[in-house]
Structures are given as structure tokens and as C-alpha cells.
Length: 152
Image 1 (cartoon, rainbow, N blue to C red):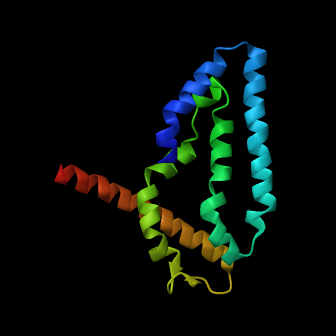
Image 2: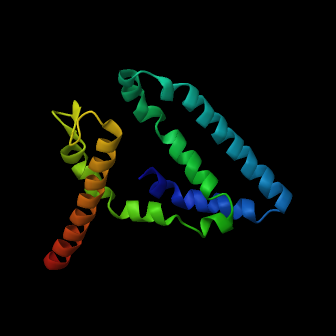
Image 3: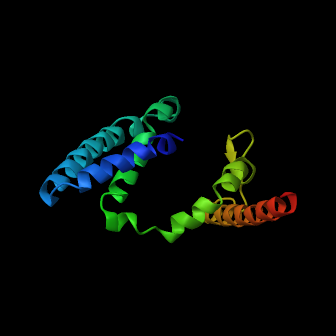
């Protein structure tokens, strides 16, 4: 939602800075990029390294830093803005379903334990449960589209 609210301001900033000479354009963009990279470094050395409970308490205040940095760097040039990653596009289609299913598939016992199919093999188990999780999310997405078509 923050990005949706600030989208017009961000677009205006990019238009203004890209109307300048190439040298001034890159100076402005790199100044912002270095500031964001500094914030990302501070986040990686600070809040990211906190113990779990302290991290969970501070994540709402600092968790946006890597996301905003990625979005800015990804949109640094018009060429980069014209491309998108198919993997992220496909994942984005099912975000609602993955969010709703995460506690039912990955986690159990009130988020204290992980669903286990292959005891003693944590990586194999993670791969299997993740495959099932993604598969069910895709199926739920298709069901959501079907129900939406029926209801509308």
C-alpha cells in the first residue's frame, strides 16, 4: 500500500531526474542508491542478526529496507523497468493463496512445528513440503479464479 500511495511521487521523481543530462541523472540516482545500500548494510548487520524474538519485534520497523532497496535498484533505468522476472510474476499470481495456506501446510501446532513427511531428512522434507505447498497454492488460485467467474 505504501508503494501505491507513493507511486505518483516516485514516477514524478524519475521523470524529473531522467530529463537532466546523463551525468547529472546518474549522480542523482547513484546518490540515492548509495544511501539505500548503506541502509541495507546497516539492516543486514543490525536487525537481521538479532535473535528470533527481538527480530520479530523489530521487523515491522526495519523489514521494508531490503524491499525498497530492491525495488529502487530494479527500476534504476528505463531498460530495467521494461523487463520483469517470470518467476516473480508467477509467484505474485498466487500470493493470496500462499499467504492463506502457509499455516496449514508449512506450519502446525500453532506455528511451533513444521509438517514432516520424511523424518530425519530435513532438506528432503522441506523440498517435499514446499512442492506440495506451491502446488496447492496454484490449485487454490485456479479455484479462486473459477469461483470469481461463477460469482461475477
